[in-house]
Amino acid sequence: MYSSRSERQQQIIYASIKLIHSHGIQGLTIKNLSKAIDVTEAAIYRHFKNKDEILYTILEDFRANLKLYSNSVLESDNKAKDKLYLILNKLIEVFCENPYIVSVIFSDEIFRNRRDLYDKIGQIITQNNQCFLRIIEEGQKANEIRKELTAAEISVIVMGSFRFTIKNWQMSRQSYSLKEKGEEFLHSLFKLIFI
Image 1 (tube, rainbow, N blue to C red):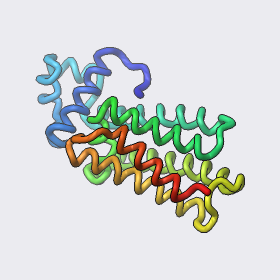
Image 2 (tube, rainbow, N blue to C red):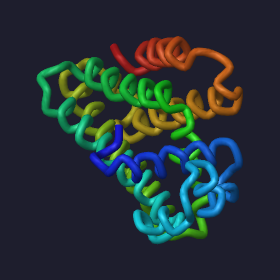
Image 3 (tube, rainbow, N blue to C red):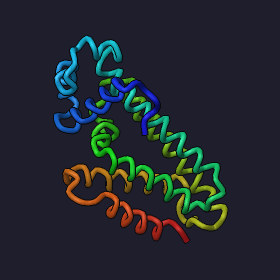
């Protein structure tokens, strides 16, 4: 789910995500990264000026690719239920294919003192919220989604319960199938919000 980058940049990004996953954000140093991919530190600096730029790139690539996919879903003629399923299921697929990315995307507390990174996480959250709000509002207008709650309240339920599902999987060290748990989550969520 990344934009086009050089093979070396992709290697650096992937190795960075793995280092964060296994050693936490403090484990991501240029020195550790150079050892992980067996290149000199100077070789990494030719592609990224520092580790914050690597992290920013990871977050921006995730945001941009998710926006591209979400926009294609939003512009489709699908019903609200199908649109919501497609977007949430796509995220589940991305996390299943690259479980290490969860450690970066859900590291908002770690980025609190890095303003540009914290803001980038905020952009991802805002983008997802706007996407879900649009789907929910469309669904409510079409009498597909319950109207006892506002679209904003339902969006919080969707985003919060999705985050909880992903974090539980991460905290279990991916000890069970996220695909199966994700299907259970979507089934329960849809029973709750759809008429």
